[in-house]
Image (cartoon, rainbow, N blue to C red; front, top):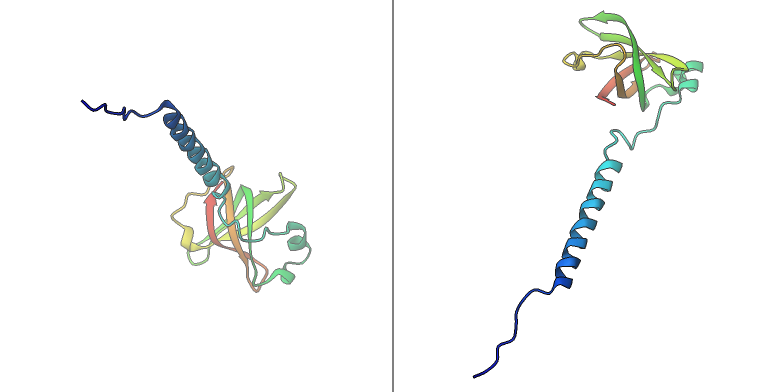
Length: 132
């Protein structure tokens, strides 16, 4: 009779497979956490430059992260004017949340990341926003 060879899986191959799966999982977690920042390709608003002369920033798009300080005004045609505390509470800027975002409940103390456009009058208008 002829001898048959064993066709069992070697423990070394199991260890290598588990290590590769672990590395793939850790790599995917790192990739997801580093790319989850919204508007990462947009420049951050220089608040000092905006407060000094908003007209120099007209027609540009910026991002900013801040905490809602207060609701200043509301108009059914223009939207809500809110004040946002930025730079760890050092500065407060007004932002006009347009009517496109009426479905979002914005309350005092909430943190948001805003995608803003400086309009021709120097007013910061929201193009997009997300909770921070």
